[in-house]
Length: 403
Ligand code: GCO
Ligand code: MG
Figure (cartoon, protein in one colour):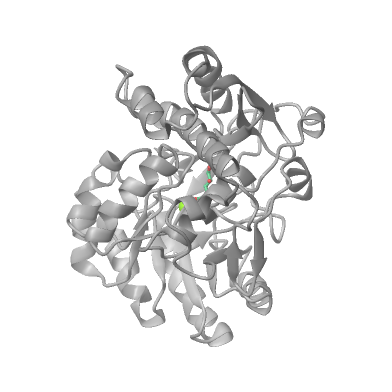
């Protein structure tokens, strides 16, 4: 028995907000879990502090599955991003503790390494095609084997995925939501030339990805997929909102471009039909928003039966605790596809010292016991929470649209 003696939530903002759960056992082991939900951070912090932590004290930290079932099945209100991020934080913190108790890196507890490292993709973005390609060439020179391309759309003042900084893209940028303007017509005209020029400049030995960020209808997405087929994209991400999973049947009927979905999914039920009917190729559900390692492994096993591979979300709003957990998962899961990797700021890396590392386009979680991530609480306290919202999106005639 490894008795849970205490748990607390630490909220900090070293460049952006993070919610971290720290669990301590009676004999002094500690585990970390990420509970960050971009733009809704304090809701998860309250869910943990007010409703979950009181139920953890005195339980056996070794009983990860039982505690997961207690928090999921035992609650009358199941699922949803707030609940599942809170459950994920507990789950990951308990895996961290188990790894430390066993003196093994987490991936060893998950069955050991299936590969030498996890292939990651970096974000090349720019105000126009040339700037995006110049940034993509820099990623290629650093050894990246996969690069996501996003370019500003001619005629639109700002575009999703395009930042002012070369490496850091942080969309939750305002005390109250800012408003963007969107035109699917202008966007659809802009993407094929980006890919055509990218293949000319980067060649064919690097994977190219693109994120639509839920902005198209299924038939528009089908057309874009078809237009991009000659350039062989690795995937088209989040073509259309996926509340209605059957939407993806229509996209599939029109293109062989691989499809990735799921960074906002929080349970297996959000992707059951997509996977079962083989409507997607990559599932992007990730540790922090989909119930932790325990639940994500279930999703991955189900996906494996249907030839769907993993492609975990890895934007900067997922803390280094999630990045580490994702890398242990990626190393051990048979149907791994790719891992998203956006570098955190130097301030974030200083608050969360970590063992994971990048080399030659791959990442490795390192050999430290458990997750291999620490939290410098004194430093974290110097970066207090700052309210920040993601933008909203309107069509050119003022209609509220998907961001
Ligand atoms: C991605 C995502 C992010 C999200 C961000 C919002 O593919 O990395 O789409 O850029 O917009 O995580 O919280
Ligand atoms: Mg995305």
